[in-house]
Image: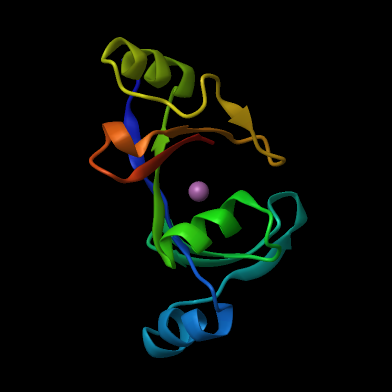
Length: 134
Ligand code: CO
């Protein structure tokens, strides 16, 4: 039986990185571990680790990306929660069996080798859920 192991990260879409860092880094005092451009996703991402998990701030750097369209449609806010799983393929078949709607039919592999897939908000109570296998 595949198992959820941890909350890996929570991702927030922002329209103004400086303004967001003013809250998360300067006011809350969280560590900004990394601020980097991800050209493949046409976005800039800030990573603020906390107790084995991370808050990720994502800001689109171009108008034609998926994340830019999301921002234009819904405005800034909570984007997704990512759960670490020990067996992503196994978990995805369990979800399919239980009629949970998946966005990705197969896991994708990130540049760093992590496997990931998204579960549709329609089946989760309105929250986009990402599954990660490290
Ligand atoms: Co994510």
